[in-house]
Image (tube, rainbow, N blue to C red; front, side):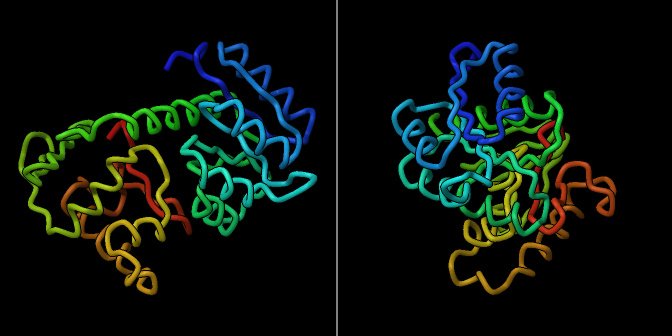
Length: 232
């Protein structure tokens, strides 16, 4: 989606940061709407139908986490949390509440724009018919035949390894929390077994990484989860 067709809703009560975000986005051709409170943010998100929401967590009339959860019940709009809270617990909670990404202040305009591009690509993928196969660099997954190749050479994966990689490759570039991976691959019964993800990620890296101890494809987001690097 071209920037000039993209509406970004900024929900931020800090006037200086809001002005910086607005100026940056408009200078790159995006349309921008601004909200300064929880209530205003919810109403504008529902009424305007933005393509992306940039959401601060510390709003004057409510917590941004609850707004993310509220928006997720009525919309699949990508939500990028923009916050000074850098603790792992805050990031995990925001992602589990429905946010698609989390960027910690301070940050540069290049990083912000890159995060928005990833969020928009992911949103477009959700509305498109599911692909028969996905390629990320030299890695290719065929969902119909359940075959995986790396540099055109077949890679033998177990059912769990394939399902885990499928979640990551469908969300390439995005951080997927341990809780999300457990839910999507193992279901509710596995919530108490967080070690499952770590064990199978180690196995996947042995099969897909040139050096499993220094992964370049399957990256760890410490204390949060994992991310498949789009560039491979």
